[in-house]
Length: 164
Image (cartoon, rainbow, N blue to C red; front, side, top):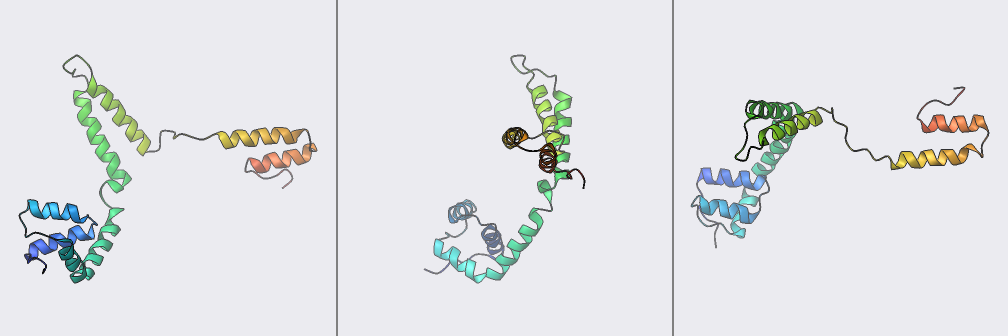
């Protein structure tokens, strides 16, 4: 069976979907919803081969802009969170049906999200390794001369050894 005849606009949209790596099922559902001719896996393969260069170019453009636009940018995420916090600030003391201040809680959570984005909130730190190093150094203390112990402690702390 030959690939269905698509209009130029439909082919361009299909190529964009292929470049974005949508599954056949998703593409077929979208095509059906738009009342396009029925797409088969073979038809999709045909268009993939036919427009391979265009698909490659679109993928490269998509990947190049993915990390430099929109919510990928920290500034943009913070700006959107700020706008959300401002909107919630205006209604934070409006009680819900049962008198609960849902908006106030959401406002505080949004402020916390902003602080995390800006690096002002401490992330969870695993102190297991630090405790193990401290226990190891305590065991060494009794078995080494004081100068050697001091040198090892300084190295473990990431500093220069005494006398350097």
